[in-house]
Image 1 (cartoon, rainbow, N blue to C red):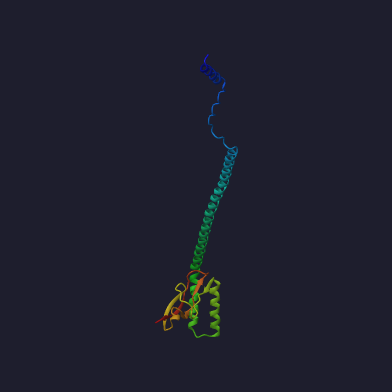
Image 2 (image 1 turned 90 degrees about the vertical axis):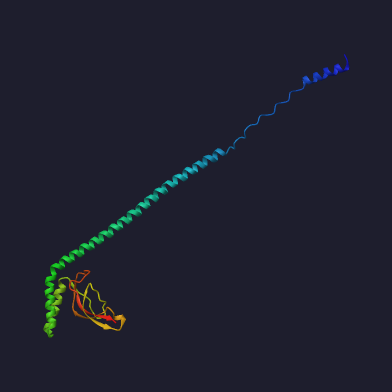
Length: 200
């Protein structure tokens, strides 16, 4: 056997006895961190808790808005009842005044007649008794002192006096005859007859 043949046989034997190389590992997906699922669970629980908190807040807001609307409605109804009560009271006063006016009108006429007579202590006393009788029916004297602002609801202008003082314009100069208003009504049943300043 030649040296070349021997070498070939040796190389073949060595090749047969050489151990096989292991195959490279197959790539695998990276493992998820162990705390990821815990964090997701905690986040979900936090969101659920937040939603549970928001629902009562919305309900409370709706309740407060409803209470506000109800309160405004109650105030409106109370104002309407107060207005109705005032209107009824005024209507009642007007009805009573209509019943009393004829008798009081006669007393006022008698008072005016006495005032036109020469005054004596007896007539003055009689005039005071007439005023007491008128007030006893629920009538109050109309304010008509000099300097009082003229008010067409309670005054009747029977004369005008010119003045160069602008501050006196529309002020009462003097009362000609007294007036009376019933139970704080808006208008006098018997307006006071007055003379009024007029600025020129």
